[in-house]
Amino acid sequence: LYILLKITQDFTTKIKQVRNAVIAQEQQMQAVTNKAIVVLTKNEEVLNQYLSSLIPLRNVLEAIFSGRYISLYEKDYDLLQDLMIALKQSEDLCSISIKSIRSLRDSYQILFTNDVNKTIKLLTAITIIFTIPTIIASIYGMNVKLPLETNPHAFLIIINITIVISLISVFIFARKKWL
Image (cartoon, rainbow, N blue to C red; front, side):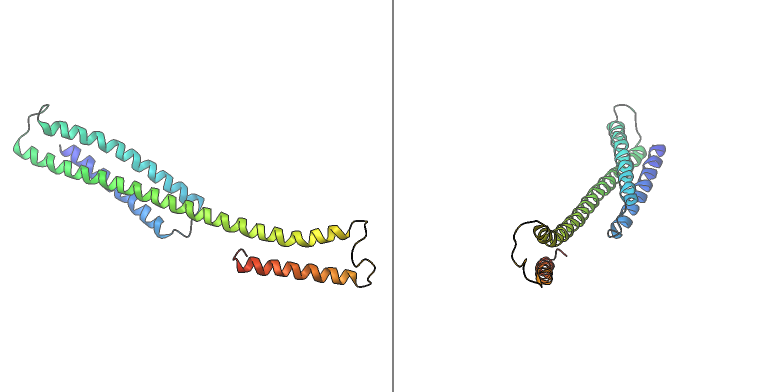
């Protein structure tokens, strides 16, 4: 029983170390790196392995506690009961830590999604802003009759119209917070 108590205490110590690492990572949520995600995933794997080891250990202790396999003295029952309480606490701590990791991973996913959405909006706005002058230049690059083709200031007028339309586009996208 003392060996099982020592094993349970070691599990609890290791689980607390992983939990502290997860808490530290939660506090640095803005500095998300690939390395941080890999560490988070490894911590989750470790905690899942601990949990999968603790559950059979609890089953063994419950079988021992039933008295069907080993005869126990009163002192042994007390120690076994303490051991089962410690084991249950370790399981609970492990489960809570796994839930925290999943929650943190979901938060990271939301942050990444928001960053991708902002980037796509920005690139879309820039593409539209640059497309307007390209379309106007393409139209005037054709060999067909166009308005202002006989006007000596046609080039400046077209450039100014293009700039105004582009600035209006920039204003609209800035107002929608795409830029």
